[in-house]
Structure formats: structure tokens, C-alpha cells
Image (cartoon, rainbow, N blue to C red):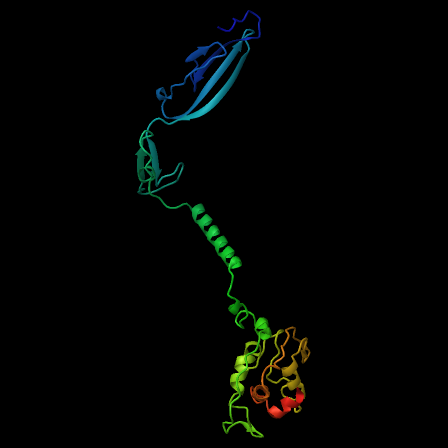
Length: 283
């Protein structure tokens, strides 16, 4: 049933008219409520504005405008020339077009062109995040975690390796004890990870053995006690060292004597030599 007609002087809406863009003549008139069909094929592709005007019985008019875009014709892609771009000389432009009724084909629908800068930025950020995440989540092998290359403190606290003593070589001996035959190798296996191959140590962590007053002292008792029982919180020449030196009591008397003699005769040190009996008495 039709809606009742508005009477003169009534504020009921009498009609709704539709106009397109800048046209002043309505292309459709309805009595509310109404349903209309807009045939966009009669409009050229591009931007348009639909104007809806409602007039009541008092002559008052309400207007609502709805902008929209029509795209019935083939889609067009252009690469090489952007809107309002300033150009000179010859400009190469890639053109392509595809119909809305055709199956979507990325090769035909997208023209070749450089990757936008923001794409490269996003790739770089994602790659950096992936690298950071991989490093933080990487579980390193336990053997490497305790190695001197990774953590010299962990290496110093790891179990020391015992090397079997060798017989006298005839050189570097004292009181019949051959320290030169095994001292350097034993030092490398058990001590160099912290104190360094040249006895230079690590600043603030492991003290140097070169020119160390304990190593270079005439009386070796303090050095033998440190090697046997370990040391923590040492201050050498006014410099504190926070890392703990573990005890080496698991090594034989011969091995400890060879290490101490190597230290006392290397890197400019020239202290008296000890023998296994000295280490045995200190135990």
C-alpha cells in the first residue's frame, strides 16, 4: 500500500529526488520509503557524486551527497609516470590493462617496476629482528659454553685435566726433577685459558704471571699454596681481581712442580725452582 500523501502544511516527507554530479535535473523521483537501482554502466568510469534531496510538505529540503568511484571498463596499470611528477627528456612508460570480467592474472595485471623503498625497509627490519631472535634463542653446546673462548671464568672453574708426568729429559732439571720436559704443556692445558699463553692474564679478571711478585718471589711457598688450594679476591699491585682461581690439588706433585717451575722461569721471571717434594710437603 502506498504511503499516504502529505497534506499542505504537513512536515511529512513528500518526495525524494536523485541527481548525479553537477546535474540539476533529477534522474529519479520517489515517494518514501523507496528502493532504487543505480545502473553504473550508464556512467563514465571515474569519480561521481550522488545527491539525494528530500522535501517535506512545508517546503524544507534536506540534502545528502555520497561520492563514489565507477570502474566498469578495463583496469589500467601505469609504471614510469606518476601523478604530478616533474619529468624531462624521454620517459619510458609501461602500460597494461585487464578487464574486470577476466580471471585475475598477476602477470597481466601488474606492470614491472622497482620495488618501493618502504618494502626494502620492512625486509631489513624483519631480517634484523629474525637475526636478533635467532641469537637470543640459540642454545649453544655445553662444551662450548664452558670453553675458554666463550667464558674464561667458566673455563677456570671447570675440572682440570691431569697429564701424566714424564721421565727426566736431561735438560731443565733441578735436583733430578725435569720440569722443562712437561711444564710448558701442562701450563698450556691447565692455566693458559685464564692467564694467557704469554702470562699476561686478563685485566680485572685474571692476574698476570709475568713479573708477579708471588711468582717471582724467592720463597715459593705462597705460590705452591695458591696452586694447590686456589684463591679468590686477590689484589696484586693494588689491582683487585674478581675471578676465582680453582684448586689444582687433583694434579700430581710432579705436574704442579712442573707448572710452577715453568711460570717461575718464563716471561722474564727468574725465581728459584721447586721440585715435587716441595709440593708434597705443602699438601
